[in-house]
Length: 247
Image (cartoon, rainbow, N blue to C red; front, side, top):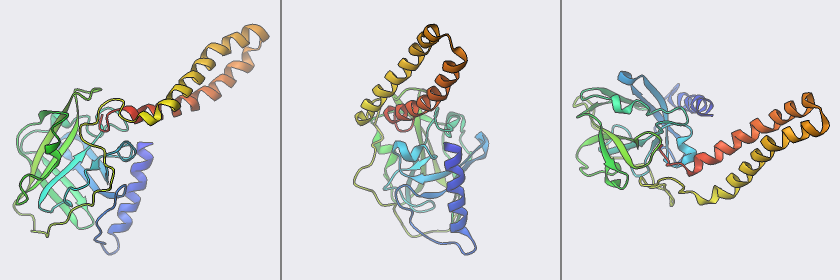
């Protein structure tokens, strides 16, 4: 799913760049550019939005952030263990590492200042602009892995040689997933999760009974597999909706 989304985002992004670059402020859910960190082998297309649907595609920019290269704090969140785990190695970024963000306007290089730090999940200020005179970047993911207890962040500042650009901010929609969202935040998906869990249980427990009763394993086991695998896929898709948005 993440790989297919990345290819689609890249195709859209390249169309925007050529033959004549088109300056646009991307809307919620649209591709915003490419994030690259050579030191940890990261190269991912990024989108606008940090809800579960957008982070399934790749790292997401917090609405309200400036455009890459613009004054202010560009905050980007990403999964650490699921959907391609783009930020799996974020803890390995070191002070002085280059972090590049490429848009239709060009490539902007930020330099990490300091090693990764750990903050509480409630520290929403890390995704905001504190000093509008500085052009900074903050990368955010969950810590430790598979939990939503804290956030691991990497901070960086644009290189001095970057050309000055006028401020431009990505619009904030009415509903934005907060940085502090933890486990089980999307309660609307529980009925689907419960129904799918029951269906999987019926398949697992009911198939052997059918085989014992009708003595046709060659029929019921393949049929069970055909039904079980798609159901399992949908089940895990729903499970991701109750995970922390950047787990």
